[in-house]
Image (cartoon, rainbow, N blue to C red; front, side):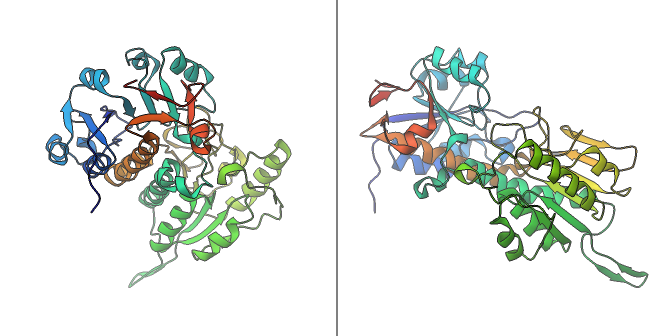
Amino acid sequence: MAAIQEPTVTFGVLNETTTDESRVALTPDIVTRLRKAGVSCLIEHDAGIAAGYVDNDYEKAGARVLDADAIIAEADALGFVGRPDEGRLAGIKPGTWVIGMLGSFTDDQYVAALSKTGLVGIAMERLPRQLSSAQSMDEMTSQNSVMGYKAALVAANAYGSFFPMMTTAAGTVRPAKVLILGAGIAGLQAIGTAKRLGAVVTAYDVRPASRGEVESLGAKFLDLGLDFSAGQGEGGYARQLTAEEQAAQQAAVDEKAAGFDVIITTAKVPGRKPPLLLTKAGVDGLKRGAVIVDCAASELGGNVEGSSVGTQVTDGGVTIIGAPYLSSEVANTASNLLARNVADVLAHFVRDGALTITPGEELDDALVVAGRPDSAAQAGKA
């Protein structure tokens, strides 16, 4: 049995519960896991309640429950579901590590604010997914899997008929025809869930490898008659299509979409404006009562033209649900997965009893976006 190291690094998590966020970046099981890696944990009062964990659960696991100011004053590293705003950054002591989805691809101003306040920024959206050693750190994969599952349930709940075929004394109800646009982690989970609910599922993605993945789940692959053979991007994500490719794809999808009852879109490009997959013409071509769940909807736009966060019904009777927060609606499971991701990123940097960055180490170079020392250095307790 491995010996438990005496804690030398202190990790803190604050309460991020809002109307849109129910997840927490630390769960009781992870408190125990981190202690074995030499990390003691602090958590703010009531931070885990929305995810199903009370303060006593954390205390039994060995964490200390404190107020936010005390955590910020003591912690060497802070873990977040999202990221602290710039006002919060100003109150965090220099040298503290900030770990989370920092939006570093599109928000240079935020990264500059991290550096200006003397913080070390660890951006989980930059995780190189091709590294086998980094798989357990991949927050995007874990949270998108939850999102895809929930998207199918949201769609089924909003749809005015059954997903499966039903034979009753009053006649037979045909199964719903569901189209999944984007066959990454979220899309594949949506496919599997919609299939389990009994729908007839079709899916599409620009990546050539996705056809086999879609068909392995028992869904049909939507043939648009287009060839985006270079659709695979860096790090396992779909690449951004050219303007010409997007126009051709949109026209073909708009035409095919009319034959479906439910459409779920999941095509995100991390930190960037999502590709437009269904135009207004495509939405207008859907039958009354059709449902669209746009998982990519955000302030940057969505996969569906005109979609926004929340629910709207078009003049033609099509329900569009902009739903970027679906993983938060499965808060317990999502938190369990996310906390493991964050903890494994933190544990990766715990070396010789301190938080240390090693220049030239692939994972370190990818994740550290602010406060990078010129040479291997300790942060926090240095």
